[in-house]
Length: 94
Image 1 (cartoon, helix red, strand yellow):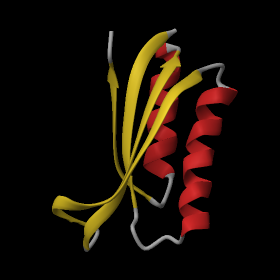
Image 2 (cartoon, one colour; image 1 turned 90 degrees about the horizontal axis):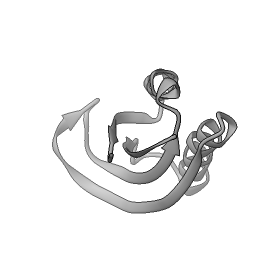
Image 3 (cartoon, one colour; image 1 turned 135 degrees about the vertical axis):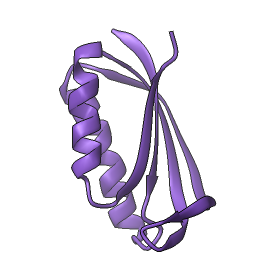
């Protein structure tokens, strides 16, 4: 297991329940793979540096996790297929 930081931006047009649902879905992907989440940081709605999908704002989420390096590609694939996720960044902190 290695330590990673996952930051992702969610579409700001989602209501609170849909936003919480996508965050819970990402958390379940991590925990179902045997990983653990050490910290969750909801940054809230922020202005984007550039327009993405005709949006100028996004809801930012930061997750600090411990996951297996072999799971990274599957997690990135799932995030890429998730419709509400506009952008994501997964980096190793070790």
